[in-house]
Image (cartoon, rainbow, N blue to C red; front, side):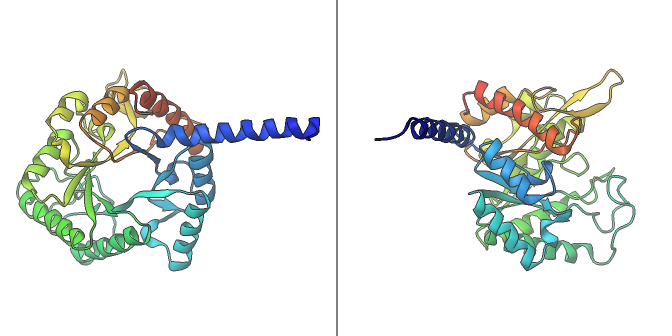
Length: 317
C-alpha cells in the first residue's frame, strides 16, 4: 500500500526523471557527438559542465580554458579537478582545443593578426613543447584529437607556404606516433582561413594524420560568404574530423559580425544535414563567439537554442 502523498511524490519523481532523460537523449542521439566549448559558457568549469550536462543534455565537451587559464597552462592539481568535474557530470572530451601554431612564423614579416608583443625566443621549439603537452592532455582526457592552427596570417604567404606545410605534416606524424589525430581549424586570423584554403592545405599535406576542424563561420568572417554550401562541396569529406558551430551576419555597412547560431549567413540545418549524409559521425561543437546576451552564458544558451533547432530540423537529433 502507498499513501496518496507518496503516490503523488512518486509521479513527480518519475516526471523529473523523464525530463532529465529526454534532455540527455536529445543531445546524444543522432549521428553526431553534440558538444560545447566549456569556456564559451563560463570560466567556472563546474558550472559550465553543469549547464552542458543538465540544461543542454550533452554528454560531450571540448576543453580549451577554465578559471581564466589555458588548459595547457594548468598544473597537475588543477588538471585533477578537471577530471573530477568531468566524472561528476558524466562528460567525455571531444578533443583538446590547444593553441598550437597560433604563433608568428619565424623569419616572415610580422603578421598584423597576431600579438605585437610575445615571448620571443625559438618559436618552433616553443610550439613543439605545446604539441607535446597537448598530446599528453589528449591521453589524460581520453580523446584522440588535438586541435591546431596554421600560424598567424602573412600578407604574402608564398615564400613560407611550403615550410609551414612541412611543419604541419611533421606535427601530424608526431601525433600519429602517439595514436592522436591532428585537426587544423580554418581560422580567419591564420593562413588557412576559408574552405578554399582548407582544400589547398589538405591537398598539399596528404598525410591522413592531418584532418580538418571545419568552421564555416570562421570562413565567413574571412569573407568567404559561400562557405556553405559552395566551399563545403569542395572539401574532401573523409578528412573532416571536427566541426565548430557558430554564425555571423553582414551588416548594412558591409562589416561581418558574430551572431547567434540560429541566425546568420550559415544555414546550419543544411550543413548538419549534409554532414550526416557525407557519413560524418564526429563532434559538432558549439563555439558561441557572439556576445549579444547579458553574459557569456546567456549568449551561449541562445546560440544553443538555435543550434538545437537546426539539429532537429536536419533530423540529426
